[in-house]
Amino acid sequence: MKTLRFIAATVALLGGVSAFATNARVESMGKNSRFIMDDVSIFDNPANINLYPNFLIGELGIYTYPEGSVGPGENRDPMNPWFGGIFSLDIGGGNSLSIAGVLNRKDERLFKYFPDRISTAPVNQQLIANGTGKSAPDPVTNFDGFLGANFNNKAFGVHVYWAHQDGMFDNGVLSSDAFVSAFQLDLGGNIEISSNLSMEAAGGIARIQYGPADRSLFDSDLISGFAHARVFSRVQAINGHLIPVAHFRTMNAPGREELDWGGGCGADAAFDRGFFWLGLEFFYNHQKADENWVQDREGVSTFHDVKGDKGLAGDITKLSQIGGTISFGIERNIWWDWFVLRVGGQKTVAYADYKAAKNNPRSILCPDKETGCSKDGNYFVSNPINDGTRDDNVGFGIGINIEEKLKVDATISEDFVFRNPFQGGGRLISRVSATYSF
Image 1 (cartoon, rainbow, N blue to C red):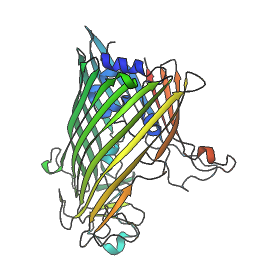
Image 2 (spheres, rainbow, N blue to C red):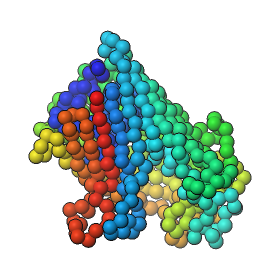
Image 3 (cartoon, rainbow, N blue to C red):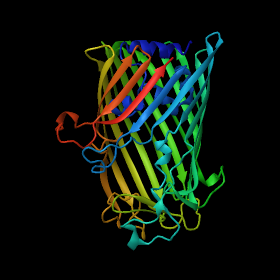
């Protein structure tokens, strides 16, 4: 089935390296996908489902349990597995229609606004340090739906995401006070401007709700918006592409607001049996949280929904950050054509300006979880060094490619080569993803 000629040429440019990406590939090769074309980009731009016809994608889950929670000789199942597929129909003339669905995926960009715990009691500063409230419900619907079309090398798509739970705390305690919900609708396009230039852009709206106050689907006080775009311009001199990017997000949730925008530029290059990319992006981020949002000494957040307030209310905490992130990734087939080794990393440095609320020293925006923040402050921040998450400094992984059909990627623990194999405990692999093209 015919897809965009530009993307087909890009895949050919990568040579023997795996042409498709997964979360494990992205995590182990630079930590973000802003500067590379990959199948997980369908969640950023729904038009890209047209580039991967008849395609299955899934993940066994992530294995990032807190240190000490898995002892030597113990086994635990990975968290948050998901799966889905893309199916396309050729309608002639190189044009096609596509439909896709994904089940059980947790959208981290929406879920990060959910509280860890929910309380219907007023904020009590004396109790916050030790934790209050009940565990927030875990959404169970978690569904992505896609529709797309490709006409004359112009791809378009629409995406809807819904995650919801109502009436159950702690995954087993029935309560009419329990409620979390996230909804997103976005549109996207991927257009080949010339044989050496392609542009993609997407934008949409989202609605985030939680607490005992169940609100209407289209509550104007809780509507969020976002947009992003990037361009792939082929540069023959480096056997790759120049890739400018830009993004904008304005998010609204009960008791929280966030504005984030930024832009940057990257480049990729193909070499013998390998692929390399590098990117630099600058950003500005401004967050607000009202006095009903608090955190304890362990960083566990609690939302006190007392009056059912929709937007910000009471004492407001503010946090602004301005800075940049440099990231890179490299992969290469070694020993055999079916085996890929990957490594990458990122470094973020930002200047932060914290404005403390008068009566809420334990705001979720406070960087000092132990004693809280009772005064304003300025400081520099960076991403975690090596906590095993997608936000930390470096990544390392492997990939297995079987006949350009089945591809399995794994993110390897950064301390794997330093570990005593007879000691036990800890993790060796934090994420396993797979795709199948038919």
